[in-house]
Image 1: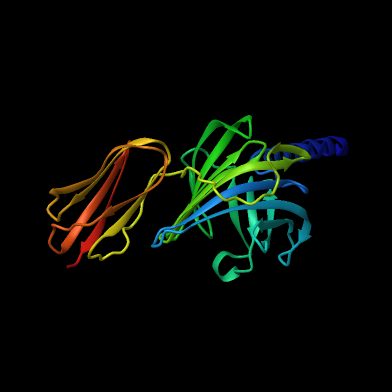
Image 2 (image 1 turned 180 degrees about the horizontal axis):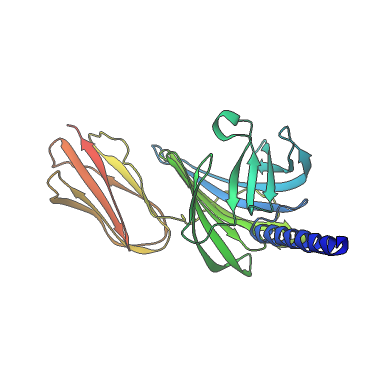
Length: 304
């Protein structure tokens, strides 16, 4: 009888162990959090208010070592470096929960988030939403694409935190491949240009300065005009992730079309147009951007 009980216990233990191992492998496929792994990104940060300055830079992440944190959980210590002069860097601590198929990041902001919060969730299915202690996570879809000359499966997530939205794409076997951030005052796009995973190098991992890097935005976006209110002229900026036929029109409060600022095919990228409204009286007007299936309207105020 003892032998039978021992065999049953062994089978149950083995089943649980293998299930945890499979879950860990599933998470690690898209989030390879192993010591020595490195990632290099090109990033462009654009200010959404005048003078619309643009910052070009490279940044990277490296997994350093295992570290036991004050909450008595073991994390991987990560070094994030922004390759400017002088270099800026910070440390973070992340761990994979093999049962939940989630990646957690340690935080000292315990009043807001507890001792850790979720930064990746492999348990979600396409269309699922998860409200965590920090943000809402939306798993958009799985799709296939080429990343660093590798044909891979990619998991696309959106993270919503207050007025800031993050779009993150995780490539199987490589980790984070694209990231975009959109806020009221800035937007940024980071693209993976090279990495070292399990001692194998993909892409370009050299660190050089960037002077003329002009990435394509990951999302359509229409920014608030600046200045607003305005008198003699105001600038309207919009982003196109792909080349599109674009219309940008001005309307009055009754919805009557007043002026067409753009009505032509535009290349993917960041575009700025100036609206003067010289012949218009003071008042509230609206401007609407339409490109492919995207449409967004915002309000502007003309004062004379």
